Amino acid sequence: MSKKRQRQEEEGTLKDLLQDDLVKQLQSKKADLKKQEEERKEEEKQKRIEERKQREANKSFEELLNDSNLDWKSFKK
Image (spheres, rainbow, N blue to C red):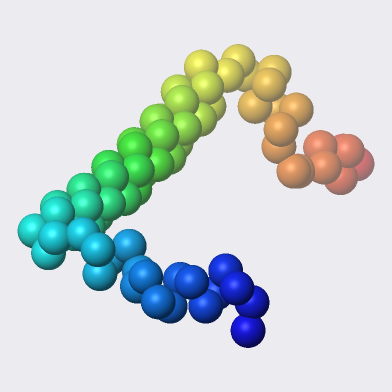
């Protein structure tokens, strides 16, 4: 076993050294930050979806025609 590892086991972990209420506060803060990050990602996702819908609504007829998967030559006879 390395000296560093042995010293850590003798001293205990950081959680053991901190007061219980401080550990609870830190865990609560961590959960809050994680929740805020998830909310931010969801808002960005919704914003991208809305922007895509807006771009689609503003397309000209020519752009819509060019984006179409139909082969217009097949309708000629």
